[in-house]
Image 1 (cartoon, one colour):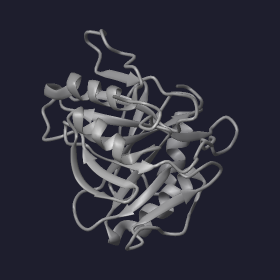
Image 2 (cartoon, one colour):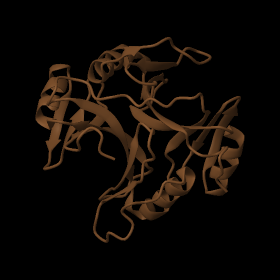
Image 3 (tube, rainbow, N blue to C red):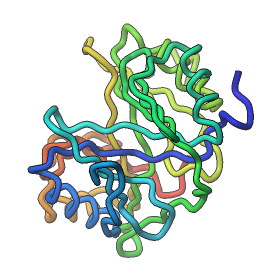
Image 4 (cartoon, rainbow, N blue to C red):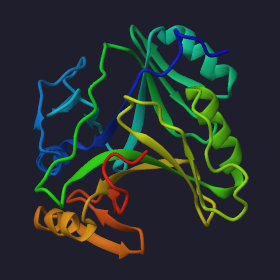
Length: 250
């Protein structure tokens, strides 16, 4: 059962990057978010925060092998109590050490439970007035066969209600984001079956085309445009979306 000690106080997103691509990813995402890489942390200096106008909530994680991926970190008062809570909801524990528990959701999306350190200042939009943007949403891409169960899992884990339940033909659901949390959570039903749940970042943009053009100038590649968002790849091949949601929208 969730209580004050297991409530989610903050969220970060980690971009998993191979060593050979690390500097490229750091340059691109630092430019996009108007941040600078902070001092590396971890036993092997594998975690690098991007430090800017709020508390750090976007990190790069140096990994060995595998595809470019991203995963959320959820910050709680009592990591061990939260670990027991998520295990009862169907999560699987992968690793555990002081202040950190690595788990996977029932749909096999990796995530971490981390000891809360007092973070409370959300990053603000960056860029020129009228064309500002901010990385403020993480989208979970969920195979159709596990969509409802995965949505229920994340709602129960966080305590944040689902907003799209009951919309019969929508490919999207979302969780109600509390004030002070830097990332909204969007839940997307994929058209086709996939081996597991994955995640990608979304930006809210005052002017989507202007923000996208700026990213292309930094080395990004546009792969698809729709009425509401532009699917883009960063210079390392990582997919993310620029959206018409305005900065500050929940």
